[in-house]
Structures are given as structure tokens and as C-alpha cells.
Image (cartoon, rainbow, N blue to C red; front, side, top):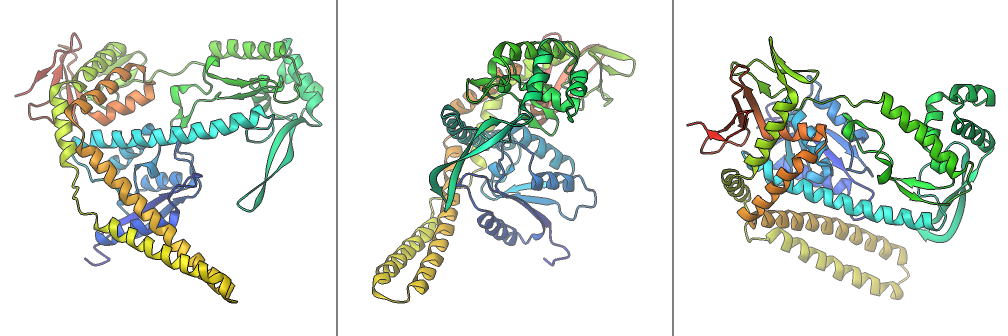
Length: 504
């Protein structure tokens, strides 16, 4: 295959802050080998170094998304090491895959079996679930460290709120050759004005007038953020306030979580206002929020709901409308969700998914590559030990240390490769060991969680599972056409009861 006719590909590489994570260089070598084995021509690379995979707010990832949408894009395949490089959030991963499929871009994972048919539903779900567990565990460790910092009176992280400054304190510890410092909040020169503003707001005074009268050179939006942080100004550290974000906005359409989900560590720094004043400010904000902020309803089935002759049903207020016909959206949505939940637990789904999961894995008992790497690591260990023993017997210490450092670097690279191979084998073995009972339990969990998903996540899930739904406006007969094609045919149902029928 010549370069002119070769399939062109792009790499996406991501490393996190986790010290045990796989380096960018190791990922690049792995992807280069895969591209070479398939005679792909690599023409682009998108990199996010030291970036978390829990959201999509990553420069390299955003650049990749923009390029995917570019009609003049020079490549048609994007290659990543594994599913965790893409994201540790299932919603982001599914949305990205949907966008790629829509624009003719193939996603290839080096450490994941290539999927087709029904396997494309179950295996990514398993792997992304594993990725989210890893992300959750990392987050829990991080939060535990933050909590301990706060209990000792230190700042959990981030810049100081308006009216405070960060006071840096040396701990005496050394990490990676640098002194470890922590910080505490202390009132800044703006503290008196911020305190006066908040006390005025607690008594119901106009925020705009207070900004002018106090000579605050801050916008009303900035001061609105100050008000939402009222508990911080009462001397407390508050976590878990904001919902996670996606490219579509805040999950659930709301920026802040319910108050009962906030985590509050009390009396961590000097207060500018009282608890009572902080609670009154928050109460006023919530009253205004309930009055003015309405989350726009999401029509779950737009884009996949059509008439028998292919005319799309469009969302219109609380209705779906096709031509002059309309039907209550809630009626259709609720019955479709009920039927999907039922279908997910059907023997036909379970059997088909289990068989396809097994067929997707091509695992042999030959671990020649892993054995070769382990032997090379042993040889390097022996060389490192020999050179280390010579250090006390020679004057060429610098030369020996440089050689030892080179061997250590090679060893670290091999350990990374071995870890990748072992992880891939574990995933493959796990897929081979999946039984119909395992799949049934997984699908039952998915089915029972459907009503609890936020509207955007539920809509994305349905789009990933369903090809299209036909709804006859006259008879209200409805047919769900799944992307999973079973030997018995598609599932059919009616909004009046969704009794599952099969096409011949």
C-alpha cells in the first residue's frame, strides 16, 4: 500500500496526574506500532498531558473534537490506547463515539478488541464502568487528602475567594526535590468592603447599589458568585457544590447540587459574616432561583422517532408533532422507557449479548510477548545490580550513574508495556468468563436505573441503543428498531401497553 492510498489516522494521547499512569511517550510508541502493523499513515496527533479524564475540558481533546467536525479533515481513523484515554465518564465517551460515527470517523483502541454488532453495546459499557470505578477511587483518594488538609486548617486547593488571600506555609517536607507548602485563607485588604456588601445583602439591600456605594470595582456577576459562597465568608470550607459539566452544559441542567449534597467543614478560616447572615443570603438566592431558573425540558426521542413513512416527529412544547398530528411527549417517552427496560431483561437480549461478548475476544494461552519483556526486565535488573556494586570500586562514578539511569529508564518503559499487556489480557479473560447470569444482572441494573438518569444521559443512552422508533399517529402503533438485531427480529410495541411482538 502506498502512502497516497494508505488510510490516514490521528493519535489521541492522554496522561493524568496519577503517578502510576502511562506516559505519553509509552502510549505513542504503542500506537505507532499498531498504525504500522495496519499500514496506516499517521498525519495528526492530539495530546493532553497531566489532564483528568473525568470531563471533556481538555485542550487536546477539544481540538480533536473540532477537527472531527471539520469537513476537510485529513484523516478518518483516531487511535487511542484504551477506553480510559477517551474518558472516565460514560456520557462523554458515548457522546464522542456518536459524533465520530455520524461523521465517518472510526475509533480504534490498541488495548481493546475490535467490536461489531451487539458486542459494541456490552463491552464498552463494561470497560467504561471499570474506568469510572478507577476515576472514582482516584477522586476518593484526592478528597481524603483534601479533607485532611482542611481538618488541619489548610486550604483544600484553588485560588482565594475575593476578600481573602492565600497565606503560604512551609511544611518542612520535600517531594520530588521541591519543598512542600500548604496555604491558609487570611482576610485581604478588600475584606471590609466584601463584609459590608454581604451584610447589606443579608438585610435585603440592592446588590447594584451596594457595589456603587462601597466603590467595588467588580461586576454584578462576580458579586453573585460571592453571594453563593456565603458560607465560605462565614468561615467554612464547602465542597461538592457544583454539578459536573459536559459539552452540553451542567449535568441535569442545573449548576449547583441540592444543599443536602454539599460537604461543609466548619470554622476553617477567619469569618467575615455570621452564619445567620450567610444562611439568609443563600435563602434569598434560592427563592430567586426557584422563581426564575427553569430547566428546559428535553424531548427524549427527537432524532429517532419517525412516522411509518419516515417523517420525523419534532418536539414542540410538551408534544411530539409530525405534520398536523401531535401526541403528548410524556406519554410516548414513559412507555418507550418502560418497554426498553423490559426488553433489556429479555432472554433474547441476554443470549445474544453473551454470545457476541465471547466471540469478540481472541485470546490465546501464548504469552510470549509478556514473557520476553519479563526476561528483559530481569536482565536489566542484573545489569543495574552489577553496576551498583562497582560504584564503590571505581573513580568513574558519573559514567556508571549515567549508565544505571539509562537502564532504569529502559526498565520503566518495559514495565509500562508489561502492565498494558497484562491489563488487556485480564479484560479479555473477564469477557470470556461472562455468563448469561452476569449479563442478566448487568442488564437488570441498567434497566432499573433508566428512570433515575437525568434527561440528557437518558437521551444519549437511548440513541446508543435504538436505531429508530416508528410511531403511527392514527393507530398509535409503535415499533422500536434496536441497533441490536436479534434472530427473532425487532421488538414491536404500542404506546397503549407496549406488548412486545416480533416481526417475521
